[in-house]
Length: 182
Image (tube, rainbow, N blue to C red; front, top):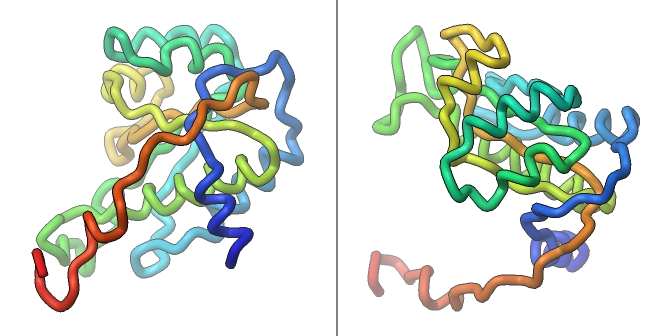
């Protein structure tokens, strides 16, 4: 357990990458971590587009919001993973949303993203989860069908610079005993 907690504590959002390619074997191992991530009723609603083409990454970079801190990372990293989710799959029974939150896709993709990022970190690779961009435009660039939602983009590569850890809340600042606020 100590090793896992160290992995959690030491993983950072990396935005500066070395000019060094990620091997197919490394990429396969990272995708295997996603494959084995838990999901609602085993729906495995994730779809991942692996973007290595420089022109496509440049076009996707243009979808980012102004001043997005990951702008350079999107093209500097040798690989860009675009995480998408199948709509109306996770969180649904008999074609109907089963929870107050409706589609459970974002929850499942969050788990898959954590698996992906921690596995990459354990392998000496860096990632940053990018969510502030024009999702519709990115989907058009990548040919994503209407039944699938582009959710995030994750630059992946060997870190050139790893930032230091940000300050964290104390456990007592976010946990309660028996009742909220207690």
